[in-house]
Image (cartoon, rainbow, N blue to C red; front, side, top):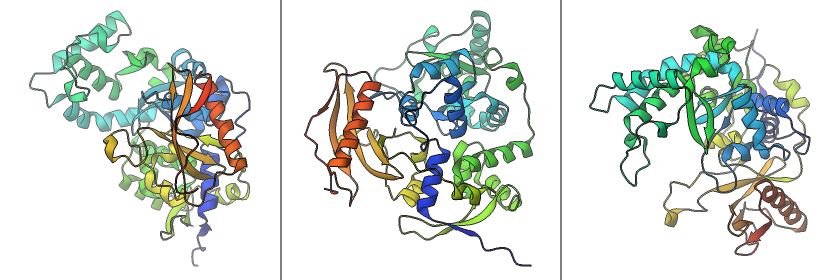
Length: 406
């Protein structure tokens, strides 16, 4: 008996499905409360944290793009008061549903040696007393920040390699699960013992290796809809590509089904795996809102740049670390989402001195025109953004210019 022909999935269907699974197809104006926000983040898998605050910090912009009634106090409640979220690492610092903590304990074990080499072993001194001192001080005094320890560091330096010894210890103990971030003050971490931050049932939860890999793959595929072993492994960044590959092969017909995924960028169709309910999902994909929305550069939909190019035909990178003279667009440019298309990008910042959302430039994708309807939709979105970041007006510094699409 031959295997059935794998289902063909178009790039357009894949885009709409990804947007739905990542919370970008719901009603962006529905009233959001703490429970709804938690459900949204668990559905997404995590929300990335970042300190850049040109308009609003990344995590707030990620959530605001999905629901315009989102307010930062809701996120603070879930993390700092209710402990339904914990802060740790996927590909970067993120807020993660605390029910996932038992699986992160496996990640802590896996990454301890790598982190020791990165943060500790390059130092010449014996680091054991520093780790012990930091642990004991927090145990005795309660939650502390890096500034409560020694603060000397070289001038004009912001790399982890120049952290003072106690800061290095704090980060190592946090990244390996002994400490947790109890809260943030001015975006500075406040550390406490993980056992005092993470609820008991999650802190003491355990899973074996097979259960860990199974969860990591199934949970990633649930949120991706479909993907290659590399995409599955990169989603949470807790397992290897080889582990995802073995799982995909082992679970075909049970927790994964083979499909052929077509691309929007002209590249060849790929054989990947999908959720077992993929046909049902594709039959009932909700239409994304018609409004234009600005996405944070750290939005999970944008994170995998190769996948983004294949599905959305949108070539994007963050140019923060690119010298100004070599930037193609700008320091911190926001992609623009219209229904299921990424139609351009906009460079803007909230200027508190002038009380305005300042728009420096706008670039539309080839073939996208800024007609009256689209301009009205863009103006409406910018007005929502300026109200969210608490400024009085929108100021186009160079006029409503746009790129080659016009």
